[in-house]
Amino acid sequence: MEKFIVEQSPPLKGRVKIGGSKNAVLPIMAASLLTEGGCTIKDVPPLKDVYTMKDILTDLGAVVIWNEKEGSVHIQAQSIAKKEASYELVSKIRASFLIMGPMLARWGEAKVPLPGGCLIGARPVDLHLKGFSALGAEIEIAHGMVTAKSKGLKGNKIYLDFPSVGATENIMMAAVLAEGQTVIENAATEPEIVDLSNFLNNLGAQIRGAGTDTVKITGVDKLKSTEYTVIPDRIEAGTFMTCVAACGGDIELENILAEHLKPMIAKLKEAAIEITEMQNGIRIIADPTRPIKGIDIKTMPYPGFPTDMQAQFMAMLTGCQGSAVITETVFENRFMHVPELLRMGADIKIESRTAFVEGVKNLTGANVKATDLRAGAALVTAALKAQGVTEISNIYHIDRGYCGFDEKLRSLGAKITRLVMEDIKEEQNE
Ligand code: UD1
Image 1 (cartoon, rainbow, N blue to C red):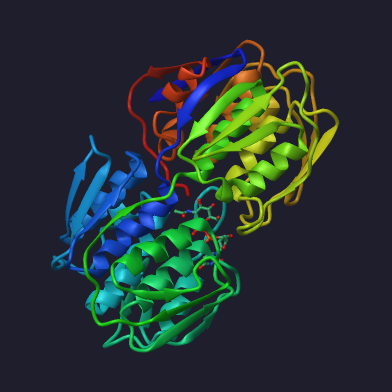
Image 2 (cartoon, rainbow, N blue to C red):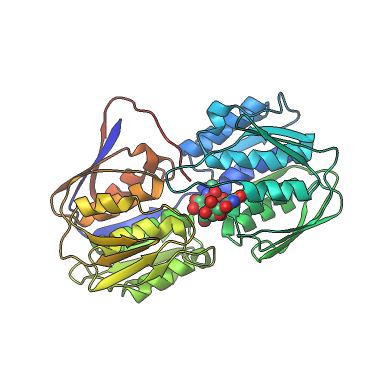
């Protein structure tokens, strides 16, 4: 087991390079199954979830070569060794369900374990399956496995009841080799969807409208090969922004796309944080002697405020002037960081899906537990400004989504160290 020991830190100063997006690279790796041509993906972050996706693809029979020094992954899916994914591997990450669309499209059959719920919510896959059925696949669920079969998918019109990121991606991938046109209505518009669409179009797919709520896919017979660089991780960037806003300082983030950070930038500016956009970068300045302003936040599908930033913003707002109201509309149980923040002296009350935060003058260090990836990042954000020492356990959750989080923070002057202890079992999230 590893722990973070965080001491109250001075204002953060310096530059940080943001890595490639975890949530973009996972679907893109799955999509590499759609072609025998071979794909090289660049700026791949060396994260645990990405290694798990590599293992899943390898287990299916793809050849995956990861050049860690260059940060590139080459995937060659000439043929497939089996049409059933391993429960042991798939149960490690929810995003593994994204192999279903490509397998169904390419080999006409896929058997993938149901991903199951996780701490932040039940997270069903009904919308993914509704899409596959509309394309003509036969779906069977038995013994915790989903089997999808088709003798040839056919394009159709699919309306999503909710703009699910995963369902939009999975249906898009299934439809690229289908006969005729598929239209996904009420599609998710997240930047990671656009990245997947760009990757697939580079391979020869015909997708139009990704990034809007109507995505049109005209099926093609075959895809080619490509080399593709994934977008920077907007959630990693947002997390560093909240760390500075909470603790004070003056930092620059490199390798970002400011367009993707719009909702976070707007809210930070509303909280009186100074933000300047530069070429391929952004500067964030926060006065450590002045508490940030209380602001209200409601999580929404993109371009609304991202649910993956809700916990970090809440941690930042525990020290606000006045109060803040935070409403979570995307997941039904994403306030697990609240009891931990309360242990550090925060004043937060929850009513249903809304958290009412009253700003306090000081947080105090305590022993706390990361319950999921972003909740863990929120605890680090809070710990940087808390008086005394905070010990954060279960940090394997944090390592799933942030590469060298502690190293990058140390380079900015934060007082954070990693304690290595014995091994423990890991749970899934995101
Ligand atoms: C992705 C992101 C995750 C982010 C989330 C929302 C990845 C790997 N993960 O997760 O970090 O928090 O988007 O921005 O990209 N739902 C259904 N039925 C379905 C599918 C989803 O009811 O078939 C519900 C979910 O339970 C949830 C909501 O829709 O309440 C949003 O889920 P979705 O957008 O699908 O998130 P993921 O793709 O799982």
